[in-house]
Image (cartoon, rainbow, N blue to C red; front, side, top):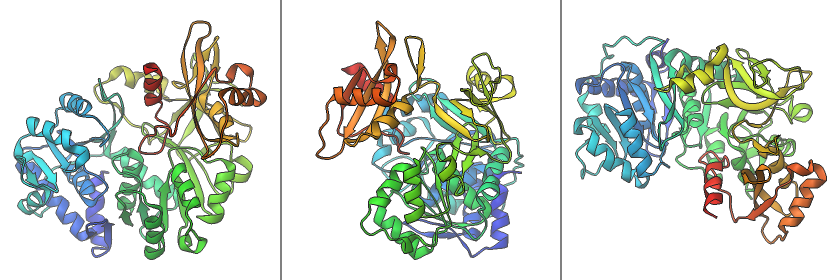
Length: 505
């Protein structure tokens, strides 16, 4: 079982069906299979072989997936780079992974990486999209044209590594999740088992594919034989137009994008009537927001609790939102969950502890990081780093991240709980909470708050507001007002940037 085998199957079953539609072109499964064969054979001719690491920095377009499938067909291992990394971070990544080749899209975000790649990669193995000829490299189209169209003569097995998914640590030793072909194939098939995806799916991806959630969703649709429409960047009007025009059946969004769509003046239910499945990633929807999304966007709303390391863990679906919307749902078909204390012992139902899972969807470990691998897989369970509990009906509730936890006066405080409380204040548009060093308490709580347009509110008033519904020790000691909160590409609060801002004050 390997990812590369899915293309010849799909090309045989429905050769003329569109596989990918992006802003530049439409590629059928037959064309996609042949182009990735040619690209794979070109790489072999340049000395790239099974087990070699190959860098990948291409945006939300067909070539991103042509590169991934070409590498999968010869057993080379893709190492995706994030567009948001600085030149210093990119240099550290290139030194650490020492890629044998590199797929690179020429664009503003990759200027520093392009210079670095040219210094480390042979020109024939630096394969560039949108190449203007001012670097020693080869264009992806030239590589495709030079490669042979036949299947590459490489035996790739299920346990061979496919991909290194970077999760953090780019300024030093990166934390790179290593996943093999068999596990990634299971993740793709899981889309059919838990979400009902199939070959007739017409899916739209407007999340960036250089993030693991976006990439994984596209790969799963391609594995199952559906058609995927890719948007380079989310735009509410264009998104609605595509859903309506192309009769999109499936899409994935983050909570902040749901809110943007709901505020769009031209949103009507008939424009999204073709949607039979709306998946949520990158955060939890409140009951109120979920209710509005179901009424105005798509009734079949599903939210997955998942991670790059573990894959999907739980799912909350349309029948659960009203009665169990404060949870993240129940474990999916292949996942066993238990909650443990700091000593690794299972705690009683309703008690909080670390969420640990056993699942065939989990990664095999972290590349060249045995310490992190042992911590993650200790005792035969995957340690998520999340704190939560299982209720009497076995629904999982997440309290917060173990690493985000603030320890104030020896008491554990979860930022997410305080953030939810602050957002209930009528003057507050958004909020984020971190811990900071405090001589008296060890750590204390600081809140960063964005007010609604035209609203006024003092720090003292917000602190008192928190004390009305939370234990007094959980209330922020300090409140700082910002115009916007820093967020990652998937809309999550960037706590690292907030901590850096706090240290700079």
